[in-house]
Structure formats: C-alpha cells, structure tokens
Length: 218
Image (cartoon, rainbow, N blue to C red):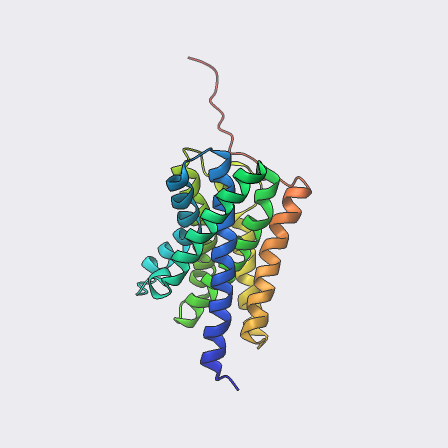
C-alpha cells in the first residue's frame, strides 16, 4: 500500500508526464506548420513542453526544475520530435490548426491540475495555487508563439484559454475541500479545464476584444 505522500508523488508524476507529452505534440504541430528545420522543431516542442513548468518552479523557488529532476523526459521529447518528423515526411501529412486543439487542450488541463497541486503542497494560498496552475498551463504555449513570431494565441484569439485553466484550478481546490483523493482532484481539474477549452472552441465562444474610443480625428 502506497503512503499518502507516495501516492501524491505518483499521481503528480503521471500528470506531469502526460502533460509534457501533450504539450510537446502541440509544439510539434506548430513547428511543422511553420516549416522549421529539425533543430527548430525540437526547440519549439521542448519550450512548449517545459516552459510553463519552468516558470512555475522559478516563481515558487522550487529546485531542481522539474525537467532537471527527471532528465529522461528530455530524451523522450527529443525522440518524439525525431519520430514525428520522420512520419510526417514519409507520409506527407500536413498538421492542421484543428489538430492542435486536442493535444493543446489536454496539456493545458493536465498542467493546470499539476501546477495548482504543487503550489497547494507547498502551502500556498488558494489564489496563488490557482494562478500557478494558470502559469504552468499557459506560458509554454506563450513562449512557443513568441519564438514562432506570433502574437500568443492565448491572449489574442479571443477564445477562452487562460480562463479555462483558472476555472480548472478552482475545481482542484474545490475537490480538495470536499476531501477527494488527490488522483480524483487532479482528474477533475484536468477534465474541467480541457473540456471548457474544447467546448468553447467548438461552440464559437469568444471574449470581447478591448475597444478604445479614439474619438474624432484631430
């Protein structure tokens, strides 16, 4: 029987692995659409997979960084990039923007739950826990878009993204308030955040853009 601390560590590790792979795939799709070379593909996939969690660890003063502690993940992401490039080239597949939605939404949900849970385990206040979930979930994609010379889609496409992560973080805290086991809290937060993102895209839900009344021309 696993101890409570061991069960938490195992659940967090599983969520981190799944989230890392999901975000690496989303980075691969963006890099493929940008027609980057093999080095660019690996860098973009790695930044997408590890960027948000690294910023979370910096803000929480958490060492070693999660990908340094589990350096084998670097090899897994590198192997995934090489395999994906070979398959896409051999089969002449062209990734679409719609194909990006699913791994990106899944990665966002997983990292929302993971980031919020890590902050909670460190004794952070509720709002800080939720914001750490948002940082972990969103900023890998932000760095990906910046490096690809795009305005980050999380801030500019008007479809809820960070708000979905924000809601997912509160679902995790709510599950803990109800004394749910850690694995169930992680699963509930992941499902809530990812489902909200997918539903918002397919339903065409959009946030209103900021409009500035420039007034009459001078």
